[in-house]
Length: 254
Image (cartoon, rainbow, N blue to C red; front, side, top):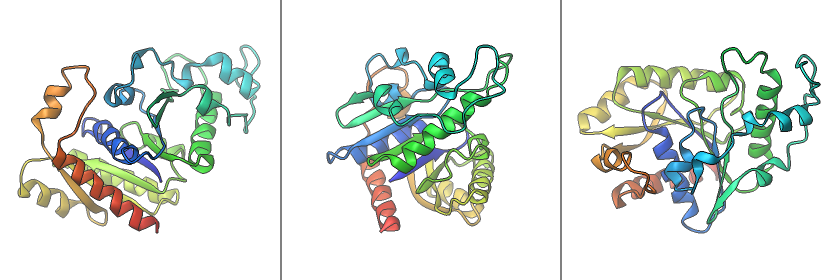
């Protein structure tokens, strides 16, 4: 499966993406975890050692310029189809049967034209989705900008994480609209931080035509864990909920 987790900032998409990766990996299946969020935290949540020392692909200027055919000081001309097939294995870290690759941010104030970097990252993500055999789970940046670049257009699924708030739900609607515009048909929501049936109903009534496939209860354990640096271990109840998500997606693909 090739899956993109997205949603408004702060809804818990990185946490749920990491826990879902754990569900896929627990039976020995190979999973490629792709951190596409400029505020990269996926490695920390997955328990990768020295995750903070990982250099994001987007910051590897020498590599990108070489592969893109960019001459010094001139980013106006570059290759549209650079060599990228060796990048995932060269620049990923491994923990058990999970590989982690960090994309990083490609847009910074005052950094000049970033077109080569954007094109390189876009080509790399398309390669991960179309050419890799293992499961690919992408933790996308908050909002909808990455869909404008079309980086997730070949995903099997887009999973939008929502919490019981109007801002989160409106963001989910925008994400769904952009995703459908680029041809993604299987877009689903996962409700997070649910404290009551009232919260679930609040989300369901406002999602319009976006299917809510599962809800995850609010868990103080997550807040306590986030104050530490330990590997996040989900409760049995949350694991069962995410296992149901996995089973639902597998049926959708069959």
